[in-house]
Length: 322
Ligand code: NDP
Image (cartoon, rainbow, N blue to C red; front, side, top):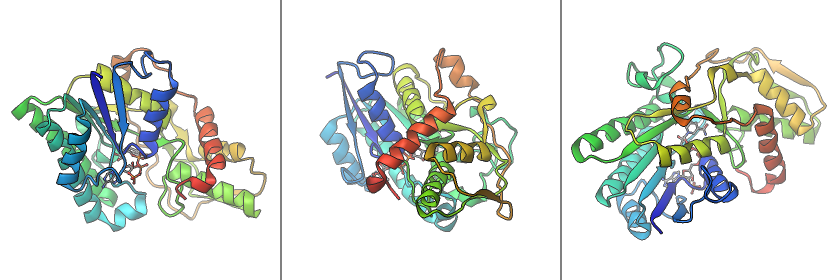
């Protein structure tokens, strides 16, 4: 084996999607497994990455030549607002341990995963890779956002002091099979899928919080997985890349809810609770840098991706994170 690729957070939404793509794309193709590669998908039971010794042991065990670092304490808005210090500390610990072990054990390349929450609250749109540090992030999740921002600072420092090939990616909202469907803590798509499923099962109304008008960019986890594989194989620069569909592919929350109603097969009463806050109307991110580098890439149409995700949820309800 000439490459050993360790995926931290390999059991989460994005990690499972990378595993799916590696196992299902034709071997030797742009995104498929290559004969000289060994892929390791690690979970928190392989190592608690908040702990430096456990992190080092994981690296010593697998001797990765490459790392895709996805592991993070991830949560919805409510938990982010309530546990700001926990999100700050745990993510800083995880990131510091993963990056430092990669440096000490001579990992050839490491890609860490940021999020569009890292961007300043008051910023020019569309978001671009150039304005991550130009002002404080939104106060609702400043703990998580600052911890993620620091990865970019770390990457530059490791490169300048030691010449490390560390970089990062910035995905927009991700959805797909193996998402977190917990009603209290899920992101908007899995939360609405779960709510709609329960409305159908219990014959109750499906009520969507807010007006349905805000626009968001959603990326299908299996498309994102391909972009990570591209970045691993074809992108060698410390500066982050936004991994997203285009600004012209924003969808409204109403379009999301309509697609969910269709995919779940819900026929009951379906309304919007306009007394609930909408959040920001739109916060578009530019994927120009990505498209200029990757060349030809086809994103899965939103409805098709949503249909596959809902199908997965319905077939795996008993084992899903709910
Ligand atoms: P998930 O919550 O689905 O998965 C989190 C993963 O991290 C799991 O594999 C989990 O392991 C692992 N993990 C958590 N804590 C630890 C720890 N202390 N030690 C070791 N492993 C740990 O996350 P996603 O797949 O959604 O997110 C992956 C990355 O993408 C994250 O960095 C996140 O910030 C980023 N991101 C996600 C977005 C989204 O919409 N979901 C949007 C933008 C960025 P276990 O299964 O054992 O608990």
